[in-house]
Every structure is written in C-alpha cells, then in structure tokens.
Length: 339
Ligand code: SF4
Ligand code: SF4
Image 1 (cartoon, protein in one colour):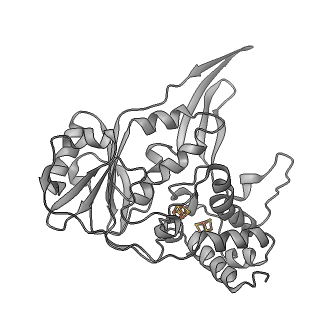
Image 2: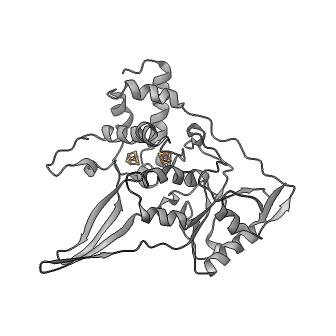
Image 3: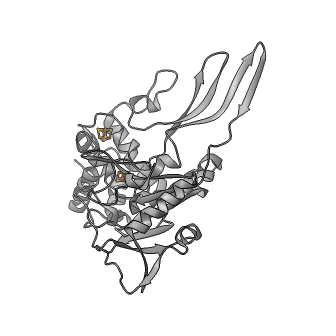
C-alpha cells in the first residue's frame, strides 16, 4: 500500500502554496535544451519530466550566491554598523533530484562547525524539499559510488516516485513533508519500482589508497591539463560551498557581503604579498578532489559529493570529478600508481 497524488493535484498544491504568498522553486525550462532550478510563479512553470536533471543545483535557495551580512556608514570619525536580518521566508522546492537534496545533511556540518551560520540555518529550517526519484541516469551520474541512489532519501522532506499513469507515490519523510501533503493524498495498492542506478565507478578504498601514496604523482597534472579554471563545476555543484567576504561600497557607506567563490579560480589562494601557493590548475584540481574525498570525510565523516555529475556535464572540456576518479580507480587497481 502507498499514498499517491495525481500530477494535477500536485500542481494545485504548488499553486495553493504560492497563492499564500510563499516562495517556491523547481525545475523550469529556460531554453529548449536548458532546464534550471528557478523560482516558480505558477505551477504551469514546473517541469517534472522530459529532461535528465537541471543544470544548476538547489543550494542557491539556501546558500545564495550573494548575501548581505551587514551595512556600514562612515560619518567623520564615527562608523555605524547596521545589522541585516537574514531574508528568510518559508519556501518549497519541488521536483528536486535526490542528489541535490542529499547535499544539505552534508553541508550542515560545515555551516555549524566552528561557527553557526544563522543565515544558512534559518533558510534550511524554512525550506521544505520535495524530491522526485530519478527514472534515468547518464554517463556522468555516479550517486551509487558515494552511497546514494535514484531514490536516496537523505535531505528530502518528501519524495515523489512517478507511477507512469499521471500519479506519483508520495513518501513523507519528515514532519515538514507530512504537513505539506496532509489531506492531499489517497491510499492506493500501487507502489513504484525504483530503477537501478548507475554502475559503481570506484570504491572509497582504491581512492583512499591513491590519496595516501600519490599526492605528488604527475598524473594529477596530466589528468587535469585541459582545465580552464572557469569554476562552472563548483558553481553548479550541490556541495561546493566556498565563499569570500568582501566590502561592497565606498568610503562613506556600503555592505559587507558573502559571495560564492571557488577553488578553481587562480586568485582563490593568492596572498596579499602576491605569493600563490597553488600555482597550477593541476594543483587546484587536486585540491578540489582531496577536499571532497579525503579532507571533508576525515573532518566530518561524509564525502563532499553526491555523484550528481553536474561538474562534468557543465564543464566546457568534460572534466569535473568523474573522469578524474575513474582514472584514479584504474591507476589504483593496477597497483602501479607511480607514473
Ligand atoms: S573542471 Fe571544467 S568546469 Fe571545472 S574549472 Fe576546470 S574547465 Fe571549468
Ligand atoms: S563534485 Fe561533481 S558530482 Fe560531486 S556533487 Fe559536486 S557537481 Fe555533483
């Protein structure tokens, strides 16, 4: 037995939500071949099928690209600081992929480690995430290699599974999910079949073995020589979370703001002296992979990657982590990791 909802009723639920003046976001077709997660004005905008996955991730609805932290005014010798309350309102994200939702329990660690980021936490609390289980994958998906899958429930408040007849099985996973669908579903004897996910591309053991012995391996440079340093990988990644804090304004007034940044930019590690400890793109790529698969798991016990494949799909030279990890797996399994 399961709880189900028709597509029409689901879209009506979205309209009721936005009709109350609340924010909603979901997959929207921007161009004939581009679907992005974007704010929804009406349920007619929402795309639930006909594409693999949106090109961006849902992190921007909880960790926005630009965020004011506080304002300042300077008058003579007097400096006034003006607090900015986090802009938080209840929001619904509908039709997210499981590999997007799974990023938040991973990111919760870093935003609550040595400092509790109230901007992030308040948005997280005010957001209800309804995922849609995947029915297909492409060669860049590797969720099963990082312990997830097409219907992985981590980070979802409710999950929809397409029954193929204009209805969805609804699995409510948290109190927020239960509240959203209360009274909106009906009991059915239909249950969804979850398709197998992508085949596993690597094991943590072989990646760990390579990391332990091959930090200086020239293969790092060879594997990543074609990287352009554009950071499309990081900006569309559900789990990349680097940011920079900058003052935007002039000597009289302005704002201190938090803006997305990325370890693939050559200026990311530039010191004020002009020295830059990461001089090549190969070093920057190695850092990104080590951070995701070694440093973050050691510190927080979780791989900083959900296997969504966005970093390769959106890369102008088809790099991202998937080809690098496949090469590492091959080198590691061959046992001759020294190039
Ligand atoms: S891996 Fe690809 S997307 Fe990432 S910085 Fe390099 S070229 Fe850009
Ligand atoms: S590193 Fe690549 S595959 Fe992993 S979560 Fe980020 S975009 Fe997705």
